[in-house]
Length: 294
Image (cartoon, rainbow, N blue to C red; front, side, top):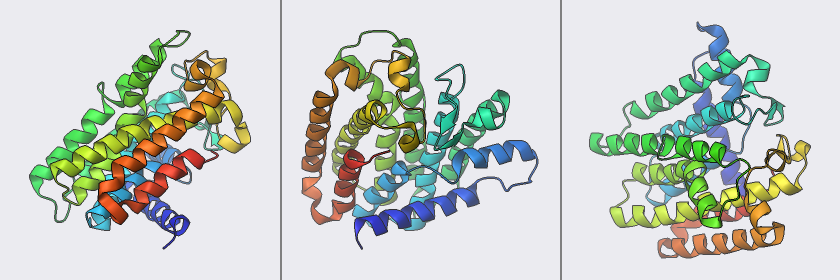
């Protein structure tokens, strides 16, 4: 199976799994459930589920177990986008080519959507996972909790808000994005590996791969924000510059940011080398992250 076919298949099964996991339309409180489904379904590249499935495939993980881990991470990601778009955060009106959740509904509903999606993620991952020992499942829950909280994504967002208008060194910018963007990407990779009961040495190596991919994703995101159009991105282009946020582009310039992306991609491929052909999907995803246009 070629990469585009594999990717499309994982995206489709992720969409189906998300639709099944979310509360049914019309179920009370109907407006909240409608808004949750609006925020999650029908959009997005599903990069985190793709990484989860790709890592799990190295160790022969069951696809149904991978679905649970993949959508748990994606639900956390979706909640973060809803909250990130709120007026008290980035105050954006467009996400995935449609009005943001607080614009389509209202701010209070959007706040509750984020809260509910976060708990839905842990409800999904705490359901019985066939073939996974309870102790390993507890480790997976802990991994996702840390990646989502003040030592992970939420902490990174706090650093990001505090950095508006500041001049950051590259090391400070990397620290911010290792948390804001990288923590959840790392969780996606490691949760996939846990589904296949990977051993500690493999988890350590995949963690190093994920750290590079997390930074790579953000560097490319900064380049796209500077170079792509709103129509292409499906969200407001140039927003980082308009808000005077520190980015890899405004610190390094576009050319050096692209060089950094190339180096991170090379490093990611090298880290995966001991896995051989079994890691082909992770190799392909590293290339996809660099070459994406939205």
